[in-house]
Each structure stands twice: as C-alpha cells, then as structure tokens.
Length: 228
Length: 228
Image (cartoon, rainbow over all chains, first blue to last red; front, side, top):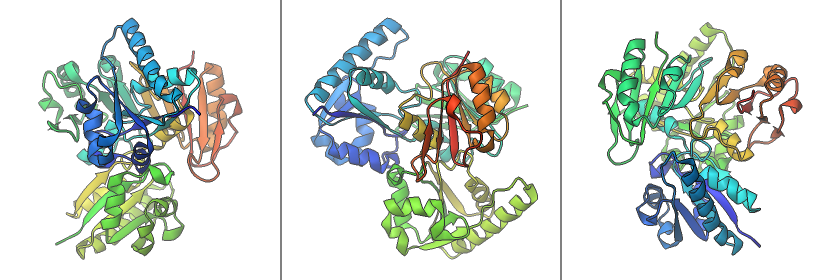
C-alpha cells in the first residue's frame, strides 16, 4: 500500500505552539520532509525538534524550495521536490512535510501538495498557528472585533491599495517595504506594530509606525489598525 | 501574589488541534473559565476535555457571554464577567479562559481580557487555530498563494462590499446570509465552499455555491475564491 503525505503546520516559531495532532503524526511518521537543502539546519527542523525530540532519530529529507520570482525555475523545483517525495510514498512510507505557520496561508508546501495529489497519493493538511495570530497574541491586541474586517496582504506587492481597506490590515513579509509602510501609516495616523522573527531568536518589536526601520528582515510582519 | 489570566485559543473543534502550550497551561491552572452559564455543557469544555482529561477535576467556572447586539447589555455582562474572574486572580489563582478558535479573531474573550488588564492583573494570550484555517485544510485548498490577498469578513455585516475585494474571501458566521451569498457568488462565478460545524458533530460541507442553503447554522463559514 502506498504511503500518505501529511502537510503539517508547525506554527510561527515557538515549539509549544505545535498542535497535538502535528506531534502525533511526526512521531508516527517514517519520513519527515523539511523545506531546505541542509535538513537539520532548516528553521522548521530546529523549531520542531524542541517539541518532538524523537525527530532526531527519524529519516529527515530536505526538499529544496528556493525563494525566487522566476516562475519557470519555481515550477521545475516544485516538480523535482514532488517527485522526490513521491519516491517515499511509492515505497509505502508515511510522510510528513513540516511547514512554518499554517500550510494554507502563503506556504510553498501547497505546490508540492497539489502535485502529490495529481500523482494519485493520499494527502492531508493539518493546520498550524499562522504568524499573524501569534503576533497579535504577543502584542495583546485583537485582529478583529465585532463587524471589523481583517485583511492579510503580502507587502511585497500591493501596500498602497491595501492601506485603503477598512478594518485591520496585516502586511506579511514586509522586508524592504518597511520604510514606505512607515510613511503611509504616519499619513493615516494608524496604530501599527511590527515584529521581526516573532518567537524566534533575534525577535524585534516596533510598537509604533514611526519607529519602523527603512528595511526589515524576511520574517517581518505589520499589524495596522484602521486610521483616519 | 495575584494570579495570572491566560486567554487560551482551543482551535476550531478537533481536540487534537489544541497546542502543547494550551494543554500545559490547562494542566497547571487552578481555575478554568469557559464561556457559558452551564460550564460542563459548553462547547469549549466538551472539546477540551477530550484532549485534557484532567479538566474533569479542575474548578470550572462559567462566564456568561450572551449573543446580543445590545451594546449596553454586552458592556454590563462583560463587566460582570471580568469582576467574577478578578475574584479568583485576587486570591492568587492561576486562571485560564478557554475560547474557540483564536482569541484575537472575533472572540468575546478579548473584552474580558482588556478589563482584567485595566484592573491591574497580568494577562497572556495563547494562539489557537482559527476556524478558517481548519476549513481550508479540510477542503485541501489554499487561503492565499503568492501575491493573493486574504480577506476575513463577518457575514452578518458587509457581504456585498466584501464580495468586491480581490483575492480570497472568508465570510464568517454566515447564518441567515447564506442564500444571499449564494446568489452573489453565482453572479461572480466564483468557486466557493461552505462548512457548518467544522470538526464538530453535525458537520456539513457544501462544495459549490449553488448548493448553499437559504439559511445556515451559527458556526458556518464560506471560503470564496476570486471570481469574474
């Protein structure tokens, strides 16, 4: 019988934010896929091994997931990754794929997931805590109350448009747009916070838009409340 | 020394979606608050006791949280709830408050949280899996990919406006707006799914907008992809 692939969300960084289901499935698995080429050096492995020490004795396989906007290269890499994973499933291995945050929110895992499904293997997604929930919790603020809308926006793309939306805005992967976002938020007089590397080493918190740096790291996220 | 209040997200219904942190804090707590008047009959208790059997032997206290749009009544009830909780904190008890989904996403817990903070007690929010992530996982679909935006909209209010937004839309607590949403989605030719009671007894899935009923239950949620 062929194996099954579980796409596991491991949450935003704090090992204690893994779910009971993720922990059980990792313990029961034969093979653990992690995004990256050097398996035990990946962020996903480093977080998870703290919650599930049994991970050390598992077969860990790195699946390359380059950060690129080159669509052809991406497609090629995902195809290769899916084929690598499929080899283990064909052999009847139970496999889990560790992914930061939640697998359904901006994760590259979903590309592998769809390809594995097309190849005819059974798959299941297991939710993880999305980074924006963890940031809101850390800052002690609501993402949404009563009739408020919540908008999650990849900051590399549409920040100007996003800023016009009503309700709470979450800008993901702020990086180089940090300075521009700071200026827009100041104009709007909107309350906003930024966190870099939430729950991970090197965590930094900016609790006012005025303090946002010109450029932030890759794992940076802004929560902005409705301004004027 | 005064106690501390932890607002714990217990996730969308599947007991295995509790986090390790929620489980630990429940076990370590002296008092467990649940939203409702009949503590052991509440949905929050019923879900959590399956993951943490130790809950049976804890002091469980119901905090009334009526569903009403009467702002005065709400304010009065939250004030009363916070004062009840504060009595235990004053006595130095470690307290957890169980809340469905994530505490920062449309939870009534946050009203209690703010009031407890104002009274000078230490508080901490612990993230839970939001219902929309669990629904996307169950249906095997992405909430957002690449440059896509994700919008979370309380369906009791602005569905017409919400429908015009780009990217993926999540309509929460669809209830009586189900029929209207069905017509709007058909006009837009947008792919959409609805789930009632995700992961709970009485779960129902509608995998096409055409199939949405005129009226759905309280715990109903729609994920709609961008249409025409």
